[in-house]
Length: 271
Figure 1 (cartoon, helix red, strand yellow):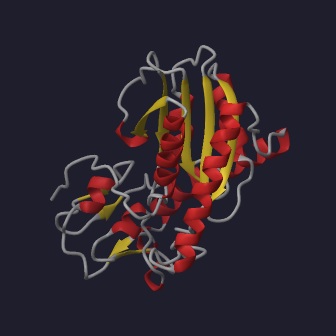
Figure 2 (spheres, rainbow, N blue to C red):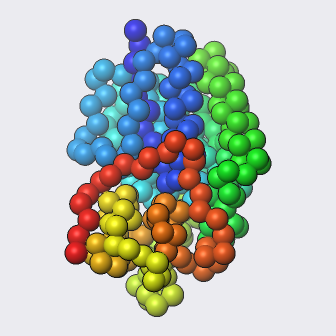
């Protein structure tokens, strides 16, 4: 039986749902899938058992999260293995999938498709996240999963395309992503008084520190302190059990977590 490796980063669960749907659809075609969260991958990825890989991520400011960008660039040489890219988004994309496909091709992979999928909006800071139990949320996620099933059929039939696969779009995605990666740490450093904060509802449970993908939170067993490595995935903000972490307009918006999502626990909480 053929084997595939799906590596994904999911902030609040949409991309995890997408990865699970891809895994179940590939299994129907007698392809076993190992599902691995990128945050839990340590050292070089062993690709020997796999004939195909998939990379999944959420769109950050129309582009690839810097965390995922760096991960792709460190992947071992593909040696002609098949690869595909899937992304989830609440709004739009500036060709990030084509850029990710280019990065994979440069690493020696044969990209067979790259596409974004509209999911329930989980951006509590700018555009406003949707309530996870709202009817439109379920409708949006159901459509995303149906679209993913159809897309996997196209992948297996050799009919999938790479969306926005032009030099202009790839350049736009690269510039947007670079600007975002530089802006967030600068903002955290230059204006710490106007950044992520935990209010009086914080009970020191430590969850935010344990689930932060980049280890940007410290001393969460008292009250979390946020550093300058934040990538604005909003995982801590959306998954805080006390809804105590906020930035800008998030305090007036619902928290979002995809149904069934459990973020990986990555480290111990500290005092």
